[in-house]
Image (tube, rainbow, N blue to C red; front, side, top):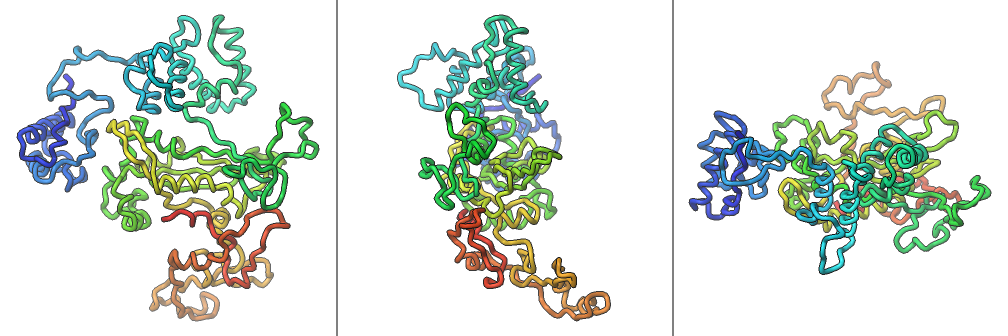
Length: 552
């Protein structure tokens, strides 16, 4: 025997909770929840006061729902046994034999529903060539119809798989098996010419295969960059032929770069930044029916008992919620962490090369999922052959601009778990990096005598006798004033420590320190690079970080 979810229209009567329809809906909900969960005593209370955080008996839950009302946004009852895709009806038991199983349904249909929810329904069952439209479809509709055509097109005559599903699975195998582009093209030719039947719809090359699945949002934007990391050729600067800062050419010199000829007569850029737009990737987290319920885990299921199990338990997260209550009011708004560092992609090769990926971590997920590799969001790949250094801000411009848009205006997003649209916003909470990368991202140099960014100008350091390294002392300042080690000369450096720990600087203090560095050109060209004298400034700032452009 199976049980369907009861009709949820009674939830809309939250302002008239004494109406018979609302009370009957509460009773049907309680019958459904206790039956599905098999709990004899208590279930989570979904009232506005408890918020699914506390378990109550049936009598208490019923009174809470009538007195306080149910959470209006809790339309998918995952805390009370409802499963994804479960149909709604009046509360009734039905026999398993009365339900037609649909196990053979192509999973690609679900993928298209997640990506293009506005085109759900009859369009999924009709060929794009037979659909009659009064107006020309917009760009999003065109992409949907193009994918739908490839989904309806069999790989070959009488084949059980479609062209689209094949071209989704083959590149996945290519990625797992670390195939080269040439080997993938060779495989396509072998399948098309020698193995499969005549008339197969496989493309001829990896390039053609990427064009087919491009509309799934798996592509990136390529932005030309100056070879000295001075600027990006994008927006109004896209038409420039040379750098505005150092004057270097935008294009490679074929003679000095080892290029025997330019490809098809086209000029080759010196550097190319690969940027993966953030908004569609965040939207996909909610468009997917498997991940959308988990995007509010930190609010719905996290237990706030003073033990730190999730970033939402941290002081930084809670302080951010206090300062920005309108952002915190929507639990589906995404909190992000940014991680970046350079690595050598060629293993033990003698060729020196350092490429910098920038990865975003969505912290809405449960702690056992948010740090999984498959949930990381690759934002950009900063090209080599050398690390960008302080000029990493030049490459971060597209990301910072998109983060500002997500903060100010947000993006309309379809939530697959509630089947409703909502305005999605996002914020960047912190960065994750080692100490050298911290210097590049923050602008505070982590070298020399003022290396500590927390102590700032009050860093305590001593140059060793050989004059080669700095030794950072004075850690006894952080001990209580009556601690015995403060007066212990023998065990330390023959001094008594009476100083207090340095005060924590506020954001305004930091902004005052870097105010004169605003607009400083960031470049690796020695002719244009402005050297900062730390001795004159009495601090270790090299630049004003681009992260200060974020309003929060």
